[in-house]
Structure formats: structure tokens, C-alpha cells
Image 1: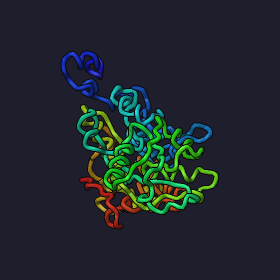
Image 2: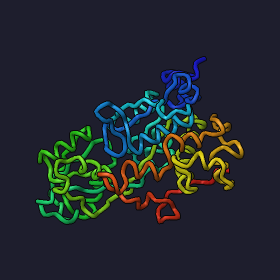
Image 3: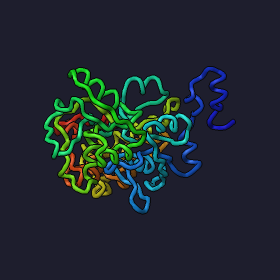
Image 4: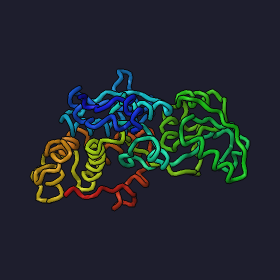
Length: 338
């Protein structure tokens, strides 16, 4: 019998959830020799291709970290660009192995779609961007505005809630794809562009004159963005979840891409466990003892990935804020590896 146990059609006939059809994603990934990762069509700093179709970004680094943990090779990843409307269908249908695409963790998604959120790679919130020339200083000044929004996202509902709660009206100009939303805003088809504040900063960095645009101070929602897997395979879920935690643990312990080999000789028991020098935390999740060493060797730690792609020294220029480690005033936190 196939590793996929039963077909989706048979699963439906038997009244089972679609995710029951998958029971050993790790074996499937190893058999084909690469990880298929669902990403955005292109959000700078998170997941975007260059002119040679080489992908990079914070969310791409998560996929590369998983490949490093599985194959000892962070390049064994293929990327599937997906719109907001396509992403969950592609994951449920098995077209991708993991979704790492600016996806907000909500209760309805977590409990009704047959998916599991791995963790929060980026704590975000929805904001608004306007043209400075319009003289708008606050979201409270947006009553009656035409607002560009991507469909199939939490953005639509958040905007409706915010305007209703503040007794304001707005005209939603809705598009299926984020590129269409951005173009409509640039072309003047709407007064305001709203989405996650990180995506606003990302898109503004690509404008011909970024300083002509202002991101308003109000944050109107909680948008915990993180990778997603199908339900029904606890081993795969654990691999994804502990890849995320390993990136955080490495930063907290001061283990970097540059010093990871030197740290193999550390006397710190926590570092020994992280890097596989002491104990074996890889075999129980289908990996080698040095799974986390491979992640740091190929990718670095969470902080390095953040600074490389979206940090203050990048054109996007996002401070760590909530995404700092817990000891540094943020809420990023890994359970201990022990």
C-alpha cells in the first residue's frame, strides 16, 4: 500500500478527514530528494525570487532550515508561489509539504482546515499606508477612503471590524493577488493600502520613491505569521516545530553560523544538546543527532536570518520589537532541548 495510505476520494467515502490520507511525509520527502515549500509570489524580506529565480527571505530560510535538518543540505528545496486563496488548498492536496507564506494563525484556520500551525516566525499586525501628499496622519482620518485589499485574507475582516468599531465607512477595492493590490495603489486606484505592517514596509522599500509614502501609526490587529503543515502526521509536525525552536535556541545560546564548529567543543550542556554532542534528540523525530547543527551551519540562527532579510540594516528596516528573544524584551521563546 502507498505511504499515503488511502486516497482523498476513499477518505471522503469513509467520512475521514482529508489529512488522514498522509501518514509519512518525511519518507515521501526523502524519497523524492527535496522539500516542496509553498511561499508567496514575492514579498521582499519574507519570500521572493531574484532575477535568476533564487528565493530568499525569512520564510524561505525556514524551508531551507528544514531541508538542512533532513538532508544536511539547505538547497534541497523547491518553491511553489501561491496566492492567499490557493495556499490552503495546495497544502491539503499534498502539492506542497509545508506552507511558509505570511500566514496568520487564527482559531478557525487552526481548527477547521485540517492544518497545524508550527509556531510564529513573525509577530505582526495590520496597518495602513498612504501617500504623504494626502496629509493623513492617523487611521482615524480614513473615513470614506478607498482601500486596496487582498481577498482571501484576514485583512478584509480586520478592516471591516476596525471601521465599524470606529463608526467609519470605507470603500473596499479588492484584488485576488497582492501584486495587483500594490499596482492598484501605485496607480492611484485607491487612497490606502492595507495589509500586515511588515508587508507594507516590504512593498514600500520597492517603490521608486519610498519616502513619498507613510505607514500610519495604528496597528489594528494581531497577526502571528508562521509555517503550516497538514494534520495527521505528528512526526512531520514535530520536525517543523523543532526546526523553528532550534533557530531560536541557537540565538539564545549565542551559537551562530560563524562559530557553530567552534561551539562543538563548548562546555555548556545546553549547547552540547543543541548540536548533538550530548544526547540524541534527532532520532526520535526521524533525523540525525546533528540535525540542529546542520540547521545553524547552513542557515545561522533566528536572529541572523531576521537581520539578513528584514532587520534595521535592510531596506525594509524592521526593528525586532515583539520578535526579539524573551530576554531582550520580545516574546520569541524556545522550550528547552533536553
